[in-house]
Length: 378
Picture 1 (cartoon, rainbow, N blue to C red):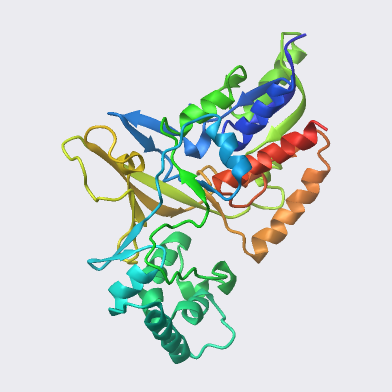
Picture 2 (cartoon, rainbow, N blue to C red):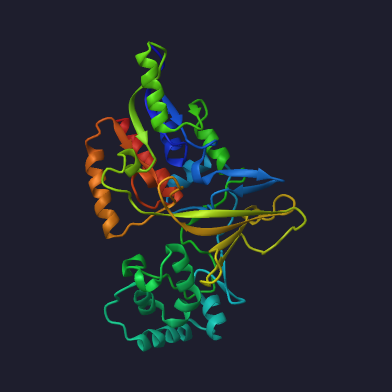
């Protein structure tokens, strides 16, 4: 005999933590395991000299759902941070998203009408009918100047291949804003939790047993061996798996593609303000990193000194950390085959960006986890 749980939750990230919290509220028991040595997954924040450091890249919470905003505010106070990144290109500085400040810097225009006319002229000069690749798609949407300076190099670094070799559907649209507004998101609610994201997840998991540095397969094997020896083991009725769906099935159809990231952190205790903004993108192909994050600006200059993170896109292979699913036609077909297998797993749920092979903003992660919990509680 041993301890019995209603759910084994594989992954202590945002999806698994929200699901576990909702289950616990309704009297269901969960055991949460995670292969890392900390909770919170990729939204994990550490604290260095009073600065909350986003260890796995910049995470700005934003949503158009009042319900999700109020839900998250139940676990943290959010500040009024507005995401307004800038881009560096060959010594020039441009505002993002592409707006009137960007167009004024590019062409010296002052009015929306002038900016629209310049973009229209450049699109007509390209004379592209049906775009055959990402480059042609971008040129047909924004013209040569915006593409060359602010899209081309950044995109090629992100995907690891030339834009001419990338499918057109990756860029379905390019947001052009003809106002002098540098707010990157259109959502009415956005901000950064004052105490960091880790504190939110810790609150979500209060009262729930969590085992870190625990691999899923190793955990199952250990429990099976204990049961065979007649020792106390752990049992559970259902599993929520938030890891890679192809890994769960042993890559039996081959592995799905992902893009990975490498982070290079620099501690500057002697410097109080290094780049003047939380996020600066580097859009030249020749600069190896895509962006530099200065973490203290997420909380308006908190702490002493400063901490920077350079973010480098990287190819992914099994064993590396997957960050972005490559949702092209080949991978979507392969994922559909894994979904068919998943549907046959009667007591296993698959959730999150890896379990569902899709990119999720944080608010959509919370929303999907709440929806799954609601279905389970019916």
